[in-house]
Length: 127
Image (tube, rainbow, N blue to C red):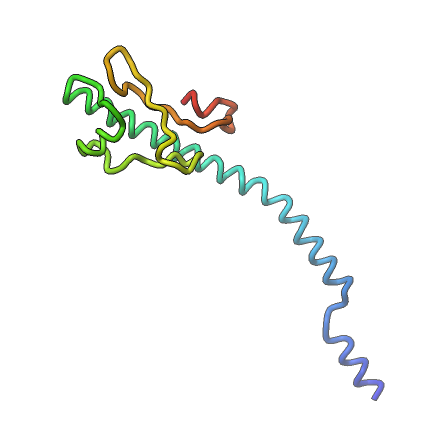
C-alpha cells in the first residue's frame, strides 16, 4: 500500500515546478513582447507611407489630366483615380486625412491626421 501512494505522488508536477516554469515563460514573454509591438508600429508606419504615396500620385494624375486640383479626396474616388479612400492605419479611420490646398484651388497634397510621432521621431502630420 505504501508503494502505491508513492507511485501516484510522483506522477504529477509539484506546485514549485509549475511556478518555476510559469516564471520562465513570463520572463521570455517580457523580452519578446516589446519587439512585437515595435514591429506592429513599424508595419503601420509603412502602410501609412504607402497610402500617402498612392494618394499623392492620384492627385498628381488628376492634376495632369484636368489641369486643376481635385475639389476633394472623394473626387478621386468618383473619377476612378482611387478605388476608395485608404484607411489611415495610425488612426484607423478613412476620414482623418488632412487635405492641403496649394496655389490652385482644391486639394494639392494630403497629410495624415494622426497625432504623435513615428519611431524615427518625426511627426505623422509632417509626412
